[in-house]
View 1: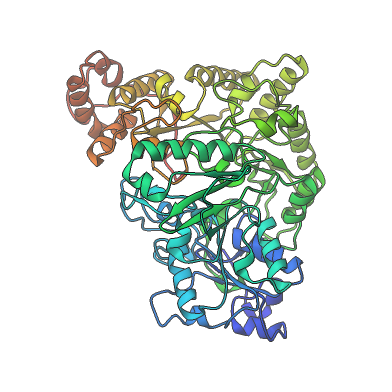
View 2 (view 1 turned 120 degrees about the horizontal axis):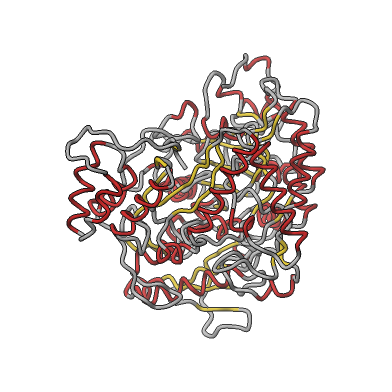
Length: 630
């Protein structure tokens, strides 16, 4: 909740959002104006704030227009005039279609990134809508797009919500440059070049950007020419082959420039910057954020902010490589960690917030326990094309020492005002159970496990086994389910020994490529026997630039060429989902019918007991996992 009278707030602590706020700073022009699909929260977890603060640190005059109205006379797009350098556009922290629609394409009634959780404050595909409006109103002013929606749609891609293969978002929206991934470094370079008087048309080679260019007749030594949009639209096999090249190049620390023809031009995707150094990521997190929503939202709740207001992000990137996840494609496979000094300074800043009650909600990252982890031999990592350092087995070159993270937790808890810090991010238990050749690493993993379970669980610990079927887990690039059962045993044992009453919260996915109704029936039976009521579940949602989405669309595993079954029809997806809820009376008849249909009558008694009628209760279970947004 944002309280207080706006008149008593120093609006100059935030980046300006209105002409009045620009005038308060005595500015007569702006260098950059950023349009965002999210509300403006001045916090390092919100992309528009990060980019705005990075440019401000360059000495530029920056304003943010959050959630502009695109349905009226477009006054929100005109009110600040034309910037000296460029307009920035981002759909927000989520792909707008994931934000707007469920896995079954039903329109959501809420939006966590909008004041009071209100839906309808951004269009579908804001990257396209905002950019086209700005190009119509200010045709001579450069537009730079970024954020996860633009980033994950930089190549030709399958769009689940329209159920069609689409061209890159860059030619569709008409922007001059697209920034992919975490944008601090490329946006800084773009601003410097434009400020030096270089025309936008000449900025073709900036790292971590995509631009429209002329397709070279022959690939250079540092180029890869992909199959064109038209070729991929005609052949799913060609698209699958394209994806493999894109993903493998993205996994390397020194990838080539990728070209993809679109009509008589091409999308040119330049290689990324090297992973940030500790000093560089610290510099981004140490910028003068207020850590608060803009005062214009006084009296209103922004749920996404409520979730992270007392949390601290330790690192970026993820080397887990899950097939259905876009984190590595956006943040990178290499983990970039902040220094202890920077993290602990932010923890102290959180304790000084007036409504802080002593509890840090999360010391985490994309995965909770990857802080300070990297390859032992960096030269090997630079050549590696593997999507995951953990699948099919933990890489021998991975330094997975948990000791620095354990020590960081303890230092955070010693800061005055901190009663307890929790781990709200998901933990990779496969790393905790992995047996290293160095016994010191094994002991550090055991110590970390004990530390987390005994001191950093707010009643529930999140983990993500995702499935029980070995076939499905291989397609997901997830470890065998037996590792989850082993971690579950350790979790229960430590809880019993320490007199704790905590829950392990497992996440599961239905209708993932390769998953059949029989797989879901087995999942239900196995998790029931482990005494779990599963409600923290979701249907697989295809999103651009993930392996799972490519398999969903093409029906082909790009790495083997094998055909893969996927439940695509709404009825098929709903039937798979039904097995999660074997304990609900209204699901019993459907489950019984489906088990009989697929020839698995042997599972009827395991799942439903002797129930014959709707309303009979099932065997009590000890663990109940509440439903919620993932």
